Length: 507
Image (cartoon, rainbow, N blue to C red; front, side):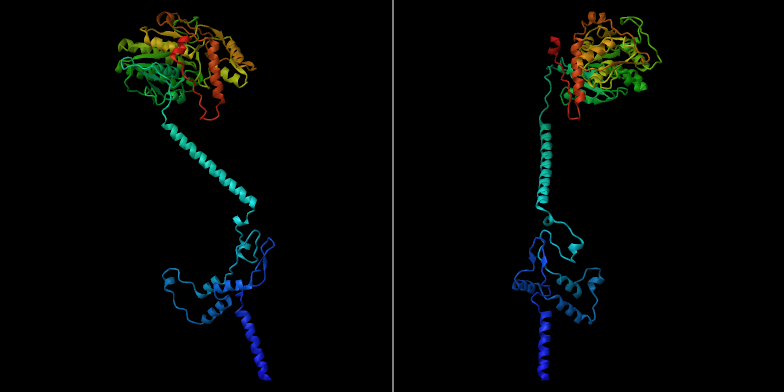
């Protein structure tokens, strides 16, 4: 009886050991877990699961017992560890590595209690909703499309750079008739229009400008042309080049600009003129000095002939420009007398037209900008001061005619039609079509009260007089300023196309 009882206990122990060590699930719990969409993981065929875990290796219990059996053995020193190199995994690390459960990949909403995913969940594409995946895909497509557009734009710009630029058709002159002409201040308002005229006639034009008031975009339509050259140079410093003619226009001309740096203005009109006359002396060039009606100051004689000596305040706010131009004329005739330099002197009266500086501070530009922006039109003083304005193309014609003539005395270049400042404000307001009010502000110091040129000398000796009507010139100027105000970025160009010689002859 006792033997039979011992045999039964042995059978029970064997069965228990078999269940604990030799389970077909290899130590993995048979409890199923939900994958979040109603399906149950762990519901596979037991035989298939058994085959998987048999291939996975021995169970964690057997590995732990194996490690425990060897735990009493003496550990040998590890040469790799002593040398600072990572050695092979020990039995405990190997047991832990192999005991990690081999679970199937989780689908949407999957959750495993106690796992690393529960503590540090890292989202993946499997965790996203289909709508999120579609949105991400659309964003990627949009970024790729933008990248391709930018690449195409870069290639288009590169190809456009290889295409020869289109320039206005210029007259061809052979080497006997073609002149090399230097224009100081050629990137300014008047200078750029003179560049257009001389380029259209077929001459080689060199512009020297320090860009204080001049702008490169005034002459950008000629950049790259074989007859055109642009030099960034301040004429206060000497310039050594070979030329046939020189137009010395370098100087700020509007009161806000020349009063901003009066010492620089004086240097430009004295040292700059000396350098220009010295260059003309060295190379035997003919030189035209651009003087101004400001040499007459606030005149006592009306209209002003070239024989009038002027009424100028030598220490007033305008003296840096007025007296600077008077000295420039004195230097010109001193070089003509002593060094036999062939000089011309043009006394320029008020001029307007496209490419005027928007911050010019003079009457026409101020009134047009204020009218286009529906602001009050401001008049300094009573508005009864008089001015006579000529369109810029008329002035250019006069400069070229004076240079080509043999007349050496000063010549007035201006419009003899005299109007009050109040009249100009009303005309511009009507042409723009706005309802701006005209208001009066305190008068400016040394502001001339009357200005009207006597152009008898110009008519007689160079056969010149202004031809562009005031309304026509103002409309062109208003259109230019309207486009200028509409610009919102640098790529929006506002290039005033030069007028051809044939067009001017029709006028």
